[in-house]
Image (tube, rainbow over all chains, first blue to last red; front, top):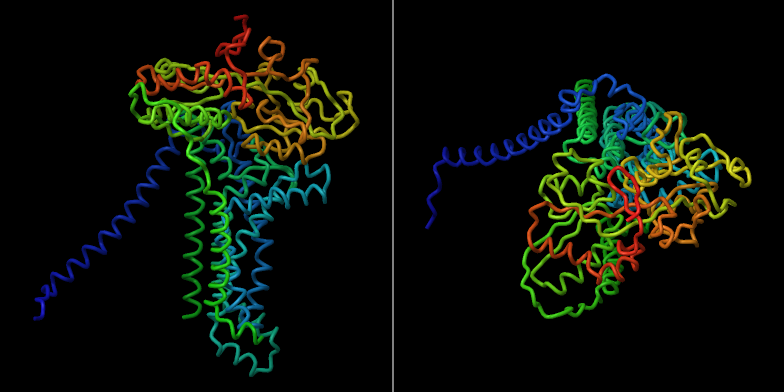
Length: 300
Length: 312
């Protein structure tokens, strides 16, 4: 008693309809999000009369005085992001080389799951540890110059630990994806293991490693809670050094929202920060795509 | 590496997972032994409705405690209390997404006059605030002028205000926080802080202020009386007046503000009844003081939205 099948053409149409609807929903959500953030964020410039140039270059973010210069926040965001990447990348590269090239069994069975567990730890835990351990360490090392211990350096250290698992896992995958024939060829030419790793494996995995780095940076750029707890939160003027307390775009956004009332200039200015953040992540994603394309081209 | 080879990745993860589960169950077992509070009295009034109360976190515990008692007496009323800050509370009551908006500051300071007219200002308690310093600081009293100098960056060393020389580490609350607004209104008296002045931190919450001041040498900040804890930091007198509830009530201690619960002019019965309950002797008589606030009843002075203080 075979059930009568739907005509093939109709089946195709149903499939097309369902998958197409999914695509439409996703596209709609993305578009709605962008439109909403842009609409609220641009109000600052269109109807509140804040000058976009002074918004980007102004050196003082003091909402109570109606001064909305986002430069200290932009500097804060970029400095913690770059610094944390600088700290995390060598460690991630080193451990990935160890795992892929030196001890694959240990790497696959113990190290990688352990690193993956790190991803699951909530930000607030990192923040709390940063607040008690990293800040105290800063005070112990630098004394009065570190103030409360909160600052750009503390933020970067905590962020480095947070992005370490992401970057490490992706670099491990990148190195593991390098075909063994490359290594065999290198050894056949008489190269040592180190020469093979440095000149062959890392070189050919470079585009994927760059992607890993940028994904890590994206995470660092967008991270809020943990940074907020350890960076000191001073957004009124430019930080002068790595020990200076600062604020990032995200921390200013979250802490500002609880004090701003809907419809006020401050509220719109916070949305403008959101717009700026969205623009930055779009840029990061664009870079990843460009690297990916160049990578596939060079590898044929 | 024999040991690692004999242990598959799945087994390793499983081991970790079951260890975590055992730990989690143990904790949950300890936490879930709360007892049901007996209902206060059999429902005489038949109030029904649900109230959303959002806003300032500073007196959230007080409102929560009162709401629990109120719901015991009126089982058909549900009150949900969320945080979010004074700005959030005022936004929510303005936009009509909450029935009660809690705020540390007068709505006039954050909303347009037209929006304020649609709101009723219910002042439910007084909160006193004062400067606090790290326990290592050997200063017990500062004048308002000295405080002004410290919080505008004119005075940077404890030696200048009668203490042992050492850098003054100023910890502020975030711009826009009610505590900061109250403190600056009383201390700065309208003077603006110069751009060159950078505090060593601007914190989101009073809890972090406590932690930072107790850990940082030479630190100064300010807190509501309800957070005072002599074991963690030292509270200062201002102009020779000790930070006590009695001194706030008499008008001698100048740094204080109202805790507001804004409602809409056409609030429903349940909301009105809850506000009435907040102002009743049951709450004002004991709960308010238990939570570290000052009841309205004893105040000999009052403050208006412009910050002008007058005899009651």
